[in-house]
Image (tube, rainbow, N blue to C red; front, top):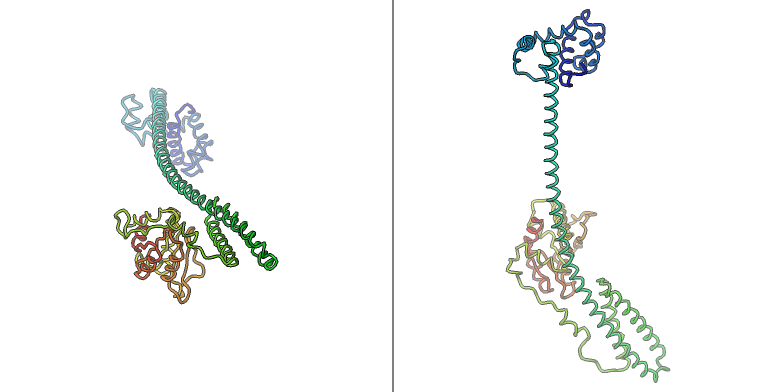
Length: 430
C-alpha cells in the first residue's frame, strides 16, 4: 500500500475508516479495535498506519471494505470487475476502488492514476509558478512606477532647492554689501575720531573725564561693529538687526562729538543713501491677472521669500466653517496653516479674539505657526494692524481678512490684503 499515490491512499483509508465505524465491535479486527474508538474525524488520520496494515494483511477486512464500495458504487464496481469502460469519476476514486476490489489490471490502473496525478500536480505547480511570476512582475512594475514617482519628486525637490540656494546667495551678496558699507562707515568714524583726538589735546586738562567716557563708548562701538560684520557674513537676521542698532549707536556717538565740538549740522543722514536701494514698490491689486479671491494668487504671494502671513483667525473660520464650535474652528484652521507653513516656509501668525474668555489654558500650535490671542480690552483686528505696522518697510506682508477696517489699516502700513475666502480655498486644495 506504500506504493499507492498519496491521493489514492487517502481515499482508501477514508473508505476503510467508514467501514470500520460501521462494523460491530466483535467483527472489528483485533489490530483495529483501538482505532475503532476514535471519532470519525480522527480515525483515518490517527489510525492511518493500522488501517493500512490491516488492508494489506487481513483479506477479510479488505473484502469487507470492497463490499462497501460495491454497495455504494455498483456501476463503477461492475465495470471494474468486468474490465469494461468505467463511468466518469475522479482518477483517485477509480484507483482506490480497483485496489480494494482487486479488479483485473488494478495495478495498471493504480500506476496510470499515479502518472495522471503526478502530471496534475506538475501542472498545478506550473500554474502556481506562473501566478508567482505574474505577481512578481506586477510588483516589479509597481516598484518601477514608485521609483519613477520618487525620482520625479526628488527632481522637483532639487529644483526647489536650487531656487532656494539662489535666494540665499542673493541674500549673502546683499549682506556682504551691507558689511562693506559698515566697514566704510567705521573707517570714516575712526578718521573722525583721530581728528577729534588731535583737537581735544588742547582741552585735555579740563575734559579728561568726559573724553575717557567717550573713548570707552567708541571702543565698545568698534568691537560691536566688528561682531556685526561677522554676523552679517553668516546671514542671520538677528545679527542684521544688531548691526543696524550698533550703527545707530555709532551715529549717536558721532553726534555727541559734534555737540562737544560745536560743529555745524550736516545735511542728510547715512541711511538716506540706502533708502532707494531697499525701497519696495507697492504691489498692485492683482497678480498676473488673478482675482483677489483666487487661491493661486495667495499661493504666488507666499512663494516670495521672507513673506509674513498674518491671519485674522475668526474672520476666516466663521466664513469657511462657521457651523462648528469655536474650539473646533480654531483647531481646523491651525491644522491647515501648519501644513501651509511646512510647504511654503513662510512665517505664519494667526490672531484670535481672546476677550470672550473662551481661550483654552493650553492650545497647541503646529510647527511654524505663531498663535496669538488678543488681550482684554483689545480686539484681534487691532493686533493684526499692529503686527502689520511693526514689520520693517519693504518686507512682503500678506494679511488674510475680509474686514474693511483691517484692510484699510494694513494697506496704510504697506501690507497686502487677501480675502478670507482665498485662504479657505487654498487650504481645501492642500
